[in-house]
Image 1 (cartoon, rainbow, N blue to C red):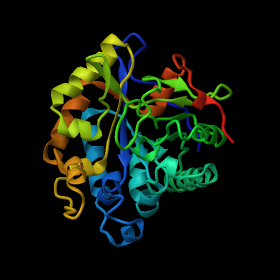
Image 2: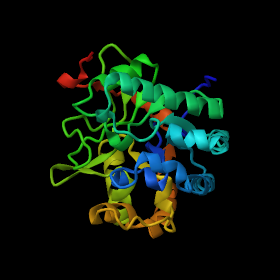
Image 3: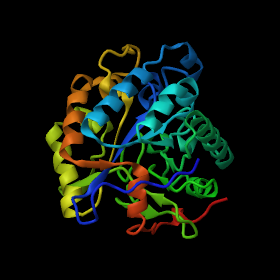
Image 4: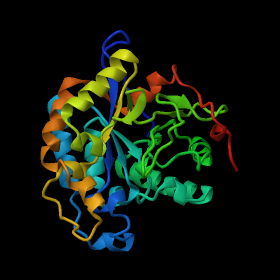
Length: 307
């Protein structure tokens, strides 16, 4: 099951290779709708995730790029053929937890069970090892110092679960912007989602809703800043439902949630196509392997192991 990590394209002297990732969840499993669509309703809703993932695989093949698919165990259990297609295309499969519950809603024991369950389902579906993890809604923060310890103890090589910004749904603004080791006793590497510096302040620039809503030029500027000024890779993410403008509308969701979820869907596929062709991209396990040499320890009390 364990395969060697393939090298990043190019050499260390070539232009920076960025981390490309897809958070594999369906349109009804998102944080924006968590208070209006109950988990108990999920089994009765027609899924759209498989068709969208297949479109993404075609887009990546066209651009000849490889990416990481952080996948919910719930999705992998229902779409094992899709999971195998992802692996067969040369992409990395990683864990996004089982059913998109945020880490800070768990106890450590509950979190341990969640990531163990999701990993087993994904590995059984594709026959490949899962070594990476991304918390739903980037929900590892100062409240959950034990999460990194649990990931390390379960043998994960890297996490990409921190948004080092202030946001109403998530964020750890004191965290480092680039790769760091959250535990002094472990080789586990955290790869925060990308931020840029604008007017002396950190701004979110790693994809998702920000990529859909803002002009493409903003993302181009931000990635160039990270690559050229900082000399570091960007970490970019999006979701399969973001390329699906025909998905159902949840009219009873709050206006703010509907704005966040539906704005820019019609243009997303074309923007993604431009992005994957303009910059160089690789899988997150490859980025973590290279960034490990630059990763310092987390200079915060939360880096200490918690019981």
